[in-house]
Length: 249
Image (cartoon, rainbow, N blue to C red):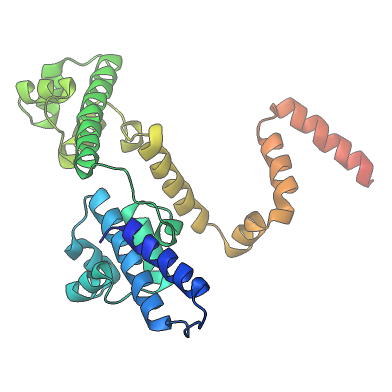
């Protein structure tokens, strides 16, 4: 039964009850069963669209595989916190699970996009490695020797035809005088997500009173003033400081 079939059954039941001269008591049990089955269709749809397995989702939520399968079949239903975590894992808004629209995504397209992304990033990292090598004036052979690698292998790295293991990228980066931030993706959707996570990591490392101040919307004006000061030339900052000193005297 499809999601549309469940919706049609709801409408038919309501219409029949409205048209009846002797209304029957509302069947809550049947309503819950239909809602659970609709939710199960949406969960399965999101999981398949995200190219995840039942085992992946069950492991994430720390529930037996049989329990997750029961959710997809509509024999049982998860709670809201479980759905929230599942939405994050499957990269869908949590509201997807109480809507009536299935995702129009080909499960094979997600894999294709990931493969395309990896291929592109390998070429970009290789190009960055070559650019850094040329900027420090080293030949391919010199870099290979310093890193203890075969020159032909390093050339394949630079062309993006071979993925660079992180253990080797660390060494190659130090040879061309670059740290890992130089190679990390900072543009596009994935780059933006990584950047936000790095910023969040730095934010959570701040003192608690600083975090509380920054997180208070009422202090937004003060934060914008601080940002403005941070962009001012030193001489202009001195003038502002002198002006403030005159006011307080």
